[in-house]
Length: 411
Image 1: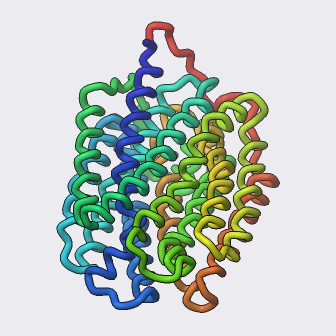
Image 2: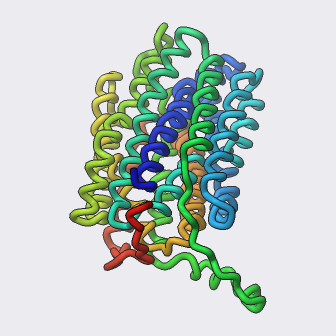
Image 3: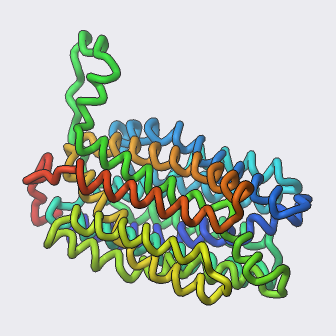
């Protein structure tokens, strides 16, 4: 099998297992915190904002550093580092005895992990440009499938065995991903970056940024950050909103929450490859704008849901549109960036997305405290509308790949 295709297959399964591990405990973290001593839903939402924002801030700080180190020393070792960190700190979160420990462990996990950007960078730098949309769509599908299976398994395991055991099961899945990456993934040769003359050290930050990023790159990074920001607005309140709709505690609350939270990822997994391939044919920008508009519109009726089944159907439709956003945006970003700088640019993109995920939960918790949980869905809709306007009016599609490189048949 061609090397880039073999890596794509292996990394897809690695991404799948890792995402099952990460997403397995998310549906019930708010309930876990309440078991650890948080008295009310309002307080739980605030702690959830700290849990999500803290990790995102640390990831925002660390991601550009990991991206540059990946360009210099290899992307495979960055992926091993990221999954290993996720494994260790997920296990430790299962041993937490109070919410403060849980939040601190999550922040440290964010500082050293970042599995998605590491895996995507490996694929983006080893895949021929004409197959980028489809390949990144496959990676996105693996991520979405993992995010759809994880909450289901995590919720059912939590109801059957307790919240703590889910963290230990998740850590075991990540350990398997680490071993598979070490044994099976073969990193393609990296383009050597010529050392700069000493005088280049006097370049300003703006000049250094211009060397790796152009107008399109920066606009797409902003759009991806906005996407993460919008999604994160709901992160501290979604499980609590589900509990509110249900009407309080029920024996299988974690399973219900896991099912609703996984349905969007499941439908996204069905659409990601199709929309990624369609983007290769008719243009990634068209698919990206259409999908973002669809996500913006579908969030409005979610604010008025009165039954869990209504919310489940709406989020399933949302997922069909969500499936097209990341593969098309990442393909456009890869095409706008020369191959030797893609690690740095994807690291910068991941940092910006982490920044969005840091601010989003705080906005969601604040808005829900002022105007109720339903208002957070309307805010999310408005943010996606702004992203669609940005991409439609300002992003320019390059006529050809930024740095096309033929891939030998033997690879």
